[in-house]
Length: 168
Image (cartoon, rainbow, N blue to C red; front, side):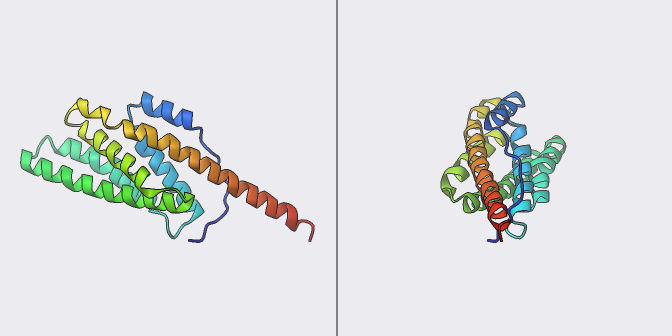
């Protein structure tokens, strides 16, 4: 994986947590989209496409929410299952790239993301599932902190390279 050293401003994990709590978890898919855009800047060919994030995390669930009122119950459940599988596949790709980029353990973040995503999507059926989505509120600030450290390392390497190359 060829990583470009681009300048990306770090985000405050406490701010992300605050926005996530205020928006009842709706900021989390947007955060995933933002991080995916940054991943595309860092490593264009290996990062999951950010358009896929928009479609799977925003557009399809909203379309399903509106159309599910018109469909019979069986088609409603099948549509929800298909969207859920596509979202989990995307989160798998996102977490795999993240763990490869930051050299962290894939299973921990994928488990937290999967649990959080299931909680958020099942909240559409019953608000009691909102408790399960707390896993998102743990994973996202931790992931942002790791990314902030990675971006800081990239910035230091780039500045060090520019500093030492100026003497040649």
